[in-house]
Every structure is written in structure tokens, then in C-alpha cells.
Length: 107
Image (cartoon, rainbow, N blue to C red; front, top):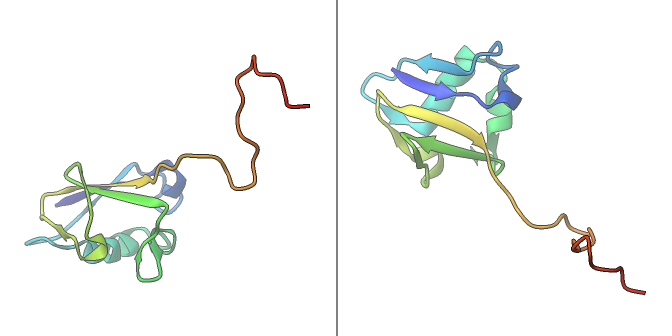
């Protein structure tokens, strides 16, 4: 049994469930897990996928190790899969640089 943890932003597809258990006898690919998840939670696949792979805004962890091989990553039959919003950093394009509260604006 694979346990997939669903991020809050996608729980509208899972009936507000935090986790979903999927039968994956013998293990399989992450693609297979996502296909099974789509059957259990219709509509969830679209925000998870982009151009045939995992959407860049989603980070996938299998047994607490980030999946590096994308949808071909192998998932053991007793795995825990966590779907997390990917973390980003830096300024938004076109935004002004941040200043210290003590720093006076340039004149």
C-alpha cells in the first residue's frame, strides 16, 4: 500500500483528505502512482503534471527522498509519497530590491 500525502491546495480533489492509500502491488513508477491517484481523486492529475512530467511547482518525495528521475522514479509498494509545493526564493521579476528599514531611499 502506497500512502500519498496531499498538499492543502490540492485537497479539493481528495475530498479534503490529507492522505490517500493506493494499492501498488510489487511497486511501480511515479507515473503509475499518479494514474492511480487520478482514479481515486478525479482531477488531481492536471495540476500535478506539465508537458508529460511533474509540474515544476510540485516537489515529490518518496520515503523522504526527493524524486530526481521524475515520473519514471520507482516507488516501492509500501512507500510514502509526499507531494509538496516547490519552494522558491528571490525577488519577483520587476520588483524593487528590499531595503533595510533603516536604509533611506535613494534621492
